[in-house]
Length: 517
Image (cartoon, rainbow, N blue to C red; front, side):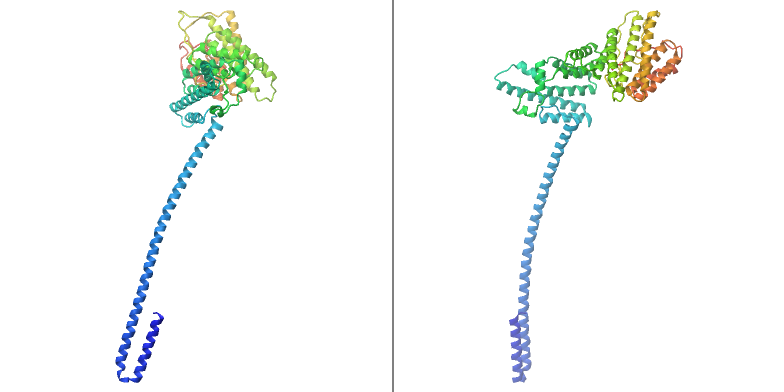
């Protein structure tokens, strides 16, 4: 109730009291009038209070509705902001993850050749992933071919700018330099390795043969220029220096060796001989001629010697094995007792001694073989699954593959002497290999191969017990060397002697092909 209302009620009560003192008879009527006046004042007060409350409630409702609207707008803004932050963060994280993955692959797993674009580099990374992480030969091949296509196109554009700047140039020369570009050649080399890995030897050998023949055409002036421009960057693809490195004869040696391995697995010995002969001739006439013999050269001589054995060119093979043996012995004399490579060269000497023994034995058997009708001789294939991967697969065929129907002439004194010489080389190789048994895989595999050959010889001579002992000892060394192909072959020989009756058909002849190491 407001203050004026109280004042007016007090005035009314005062007037009523005065009237009661002056006129007592009319007190009841005046009292009734007082109640009516007081009630009217109270009604006015209630009406005023109700109006004020309604106004306050109306103002509060309006303020609440305005606050709710502002809150919904703020919530919407927050949602949109969070969505934008999440989307931007996701895109940024994805980009950095993609870039980081390519950077890691480039740095540690599959470095790209210099002078290619980022798109080509990504194709090579994709091919590597489809080779190693999620194998898919078809997709990997697509990646490789796309990388080759893009690199060739970039080179064509680059040389077109170069011709324009030089005001004309030979188109033949341009195509020649494009095909010999080091980056393009390296990508094709990777494609050839991929084909060889999935068993497509013909396609791999074709690429490698073309590459080493391209390198054969290089001149000393070009090689000198290539060495001077070896530091090449991506800038040359975008208007920078246009001098790009070309493949050299030294680069072609590895291509020729890889091609020879494929040709030998396919039985194309003439193609393999051409490739290996080119490597040896280029090394003998190159800048490294007369330098210290490397393990790579020993491997080349051994591989070519094994190839000649398959072609029955025993004299050529023997000269190569002897030359390789002399080089290994000279190398061993220069090594100290604490040298880490001493065991490797030691086992290499044992392997070459066994190769010489097998070559002599093969020559002796070939000289006394008298075929009845000169049938077409089937070329033996190397063991494609051999665990001896240092140079190429072991060229010794299994006993079941080496059976022949040729008629043996009676042994002469000269033949006996040759066989004894061959056995002497092989026994010396076994003795050397056993010295490093359990310490060097090559020595154990060499010992197993030589013991198996001796077992076949004793089996031919009819001494089955000695042959069986040789096969069992060969199996022990093959197991130590983890030569699973040898384990399978030697187990077959043991089973043949232990399960078949002694009156069985004529045992197989010994293999005359030394390991191509």
